[in-house]
Length: 589
Image (cartoon, rainbow, N blue to C red; front, side, top):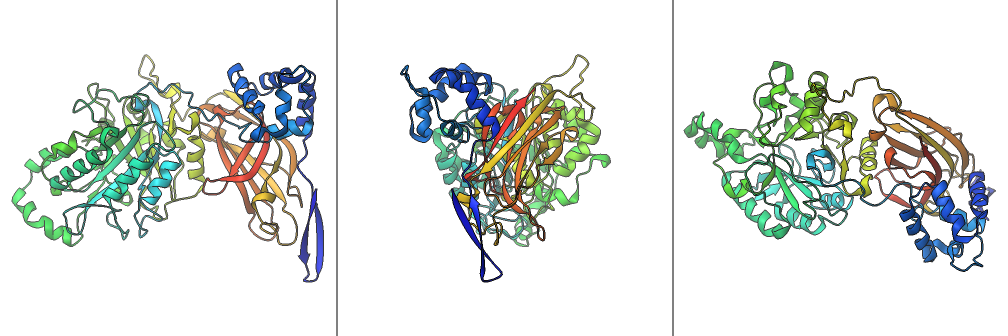
């Protein structure tokens, strides 16, 4: 036990005692129950009855504890000697409050990974090469590396001819963003592709190239990735491969260049050929939305979204680059006519369709069931609207509830929405692929599918108890939160999910304590627990200014380990603090 001294009024000093973290009553009760049995049997019973661990996981925990190291003194608790000492309360508490020994969710892949990729949500980045905003930041391989290290499985590259028109740059077209050479990006992708996950990495290419440059890119991709590159055996697929079948493989997704042949035949090619270079030099290459052809007057895309197109105006495309086309596994089709027609499922081939967040909102209002049927076999990609120049993000829940697999996010925008995305993909061992709920993959006898707008009964109830928190005194300076006294922490706990499930609640504020003890319980009825996220935040109360940020995390509700768990907190960007954590209890009934 130590103390902290704070100066106030220039010449006065106030001292505050800084107690060590002590076991709360719930931990004391659990320790007493575990101590009723001797040695290993006591902890095994605790792991089974309170923590609800299966026998295999209990064996793993006991083996880790017996190995000592991070387990410290609790290794005595699992000794095989008949005379093994019962654990001390501090040993037991140390085990429970360790995020590495007693985490809130599993770090192992546990879902079936043998279904087609269309059956999974995939951790997807948007304009993955940008270092900051969407208007004038630099393009670089650095944010690509960071995304891959954080488990992102879909990397987006915008390909444009360089100034000499003899090679390819990556940049956000029509903006002031500085370019980066494509080879630099490809080499970094190869080096870091599987550093966080062994499951397939998808590269989505926004193609603004002539046929000769497409062929050049095909050569670069083939040479750089070698055997890592998955090349489909046929021109079109009637079902996507599974993540399991494509482990440690890189796959390409873009619009096949030959989709423009019909358009080219219908145009005055001489007129086009004479003006292309001049228009390019003047910066007048117009980018249209990739789905502009899928709408009638009722489904027109917003002008604000046209900067997120999949290709430049077709009149600037040349003939097919065969080497380029054969590398494409996930084809981005070119739908025609009404949106309803664009969402029709072709039994003979699968494809990817892209919609902006604004288009998705309009589409779900009139074609919600069609979208869900489409995503049962095909892939739907959602991207931020063009007005998000500060790299902010949107609420992903509408896209997820309609089965959209690739919900593309700006990884540079450190906002609430990105925290939800990061939390969602902590599921399934953080591998970047999360199996969609069964209700989004099923179709009834009359073609009926899940209705996100329907009023649903409560399916599960989550009970959360927030015991206490610790670690700020190790990770922050003593005056970080308040110059004149220790912090006044309170916790916010709630649910992000479908509208009926969304709620936030808060604890009382504990004044002048680096180790706040709340001991408060909250109950959350859930109608769609499969898509629910537990949101946890800690704030430091400030009477006169904006409250200070003390940490956050988001955890998938259906992944929560039951019982008493140590929950590590993260900073605003999603980076885990070294020491800051909460002790919580979860019960899902």
